[in-house]
Length: 281
Image 1: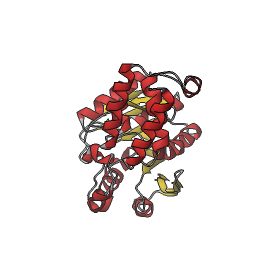
Image 2: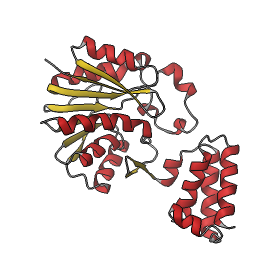
Image 3: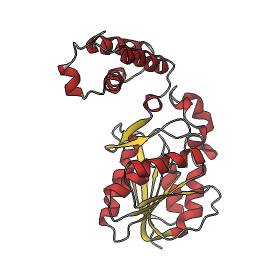
Image 4: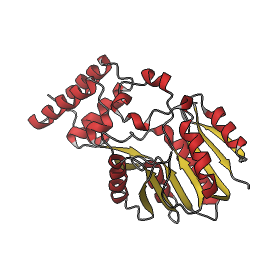
C-alpha cells in the first residue's frame, strides 16, 4: 500500500466513524507512522509503507474508530507550538485554551510581578507555556491527582521549564502553603452533570474528575475565588477558562468578590472562553 493509498483509506474510515476533522486526522496519522513531514509526504506519496507501518496504521485506525483520543494514541500533542506528553488520567490540551494563555501572556509582559499560580494544572500545558513565553516568570502548578501531576513533571523536563514546578494539593480544600501571586490562572472542571451525556465520544475517555463540576458547573470557580483571592497581589489578575454559556456567571462571581476590569474573550470558534479580572483591594 502506498502512502497516498493509505491516506485515502484512512480518511474514508475516519469519516465513516463520524470523526468531524477526518482530513486533518488522516494527515496526522500518516505523518506519525511514516515519520515524514507534510512536504516529505507529498514528495513520497507513491512510496510503499513497510509491513510495520501498515500494522501500525491498522491499529491506530481501529482505536480511532471506537473514538479513543488520537492524542492518547500518539502519547503526546502540541499546544502553543510545544510538545506535551498526554495519556489516560490527564485532560488533552485543546486549542481553545490558547485564548486563556494569550490573555495571561499579555498581562505578564506588562506586569512588574511575574509570580504565577496555575490551578488544576493537569498536563501543565498552561503553566509551562507561560513559563516558556515569559522567561522571567515563576510558575507554580497545582494538581490534585498523582497521575496528572506526573505528566506535568514529565512535561516540565520535556520543555526545559526550569522556572515551573508542580505542587500536589486539592484546589477545593487547599492545605499547602501559598505565597503571593501576580497571576492566578485556571482551566478547572466546568461541565455540569446534566451536560455530561452530551460530551464528545473522545471526551468520555478523559478523566471525569477533570471535566465534571457540581453546582451547575460553578463549583471550582466559586472555590478558587473564595480560597485564593487573598493570595493574589493588588493589581494582580485572575483568569479562567470557562465552558459555553458560563462566562457571565463567572464574571458575576468575580464582580461580587470586588474584582474590577472584568474581561471576556472569545476563542477561535466564537465561544466566550476566557474570563479575566483585576484585584483592586
